[in-house]
Structure formats: structure tokens, C-alpha cells
Length: 285
Image 1 (cartoon, rainbow, N blue to C red):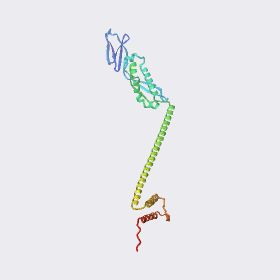
Image 2: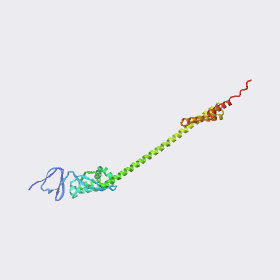
Image 3: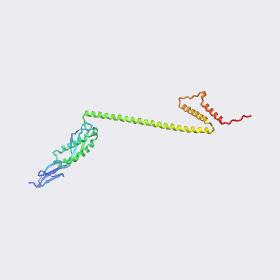
Image 4: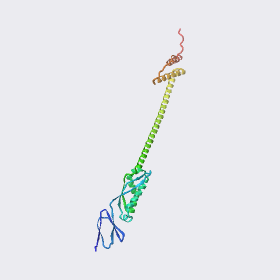
């Protein structure tokens, strides 16, 4: 009768020992082990601790009502041999079902293009959603969730591409309309500002002109010229300035009639003013 019963714990393996059909302990350090007489222990299970790969068929409907297949590969590892062995007949299958349900729930809240973009973040979201539950119930840890490019039926893909193309065209049209509107607003504001500045310039020009005329009028009157004559001279000067400015604009010919020569009228007004200022000389003997 053997005194010791040997058993081996291999690398990346856990051995579950039972006594009288009940769990006793887990041995996970590699090497040759012995069961002593009287311990009444037996090897109940050998649990592989290596990371295992599992493909899950995932078909889901997105938020924009697109039916899509999402090829998914799970990397799982036993982290609690006791929970893994005793809590389920097929823990890998049940863990896959939990992960599939979680992914469907996540993708149902996404539009199709978001599913394409969120492949790398979906794995983190799945771990956050069901990772703790899988460890507690089945002794399994999610190492990685690898999601390949979603696949949709060819007809659905054509419809989706057409819808996206129409959407992009609509956006481009809207952006062009907004740009044209903005340009029109800016052009109108520029015209408004130009008119305002032009009006201010004209007003300032008129104010300067009136001040200059006032100074000229006061100078003529202070020199002894009658006010009426001074007014006539200034009016004639303004007429001549206006004719000169009009002639400078081009395509305008300024003519005067023989009896309406402004220069002659001004000279006559000056002579009349001088005559009124000179005292009458007594006749010479």
C-alpha cells in the first residue's frame, strides 16, 4: 500500500483538490505534489490558466436601424479556479453570452458610423459593464475584446452610402448658403459704413466751407464793402468754383453767354463797391 499519492501541477494550471466530494483547496504552483495518507484528498479538476480565445457571433441593430454583424474575438483568462469550476457547467459560453448582450446594448445606442469609429473603445466599455460580474460569477477575467470592422448587407451598405452622400451634399449646400449670407451681410455692412463715412466727410467739408465763407464775408465787410455787394461777390466765387469742379470731372464743357459772363459780373460788383467807398472829389477849377 502506497504511503504517498503523487500528482503534478503543470505550468499555467491550477489543480482543485476535494475531500469527500467537497472543495478543499487549489494548488497552482507548478511541480510534483503528494497527497499524504489519511488526508482523503483527490484531484477533482485541472483548470487551464492560459489566456484563451473565443469568437462570438454578434448581430445587432444600430440606433439608425441598420442591421449589422460585428465580428468579435474575446481573450479570457481564469482568475478564480474555484468559481470557474463550481459555478457553471460552461463558463466560457455563459461569459460570451453576457458579453454579447452588453455589446448589443452598447451598439443599439450608436449610429452605424459611430460603431465603425468606436471599435477600439467598445472593448473598454464592455469590460467596465460586465467585467466585475464575470469575475465574481464565473472566475473569468476579460483580457481583451477585439472588434473587427462591422459588416452590413450589400444593399444596406449601398443605401447607407447614398444617405451619407446626400447628407454631405446637404451640409455642403447649407455651408455655402451660410457663407453667401455672411458675405452679403458683410458687404451690406461695408456699404453702410462707407455711406456713413462719406456723409460725415461731406458734412465736415460743408462745415469747413461755411466757416471759410463766413471769414471771407466778414473780411469784405470789415474792409468797407456793403454787405449786399459782399454777398454777390461770394456767390459769384462759389459759382466759379462749382463750374471749375464740374469741368474737372471730364466730358463737361462749360460755356457762358455774352451777357452772363460771371467774371465780368464779379468785376462790375467790385467796381461798384469801390465807387461807393471813394469820397466825391470837388471839381477842379
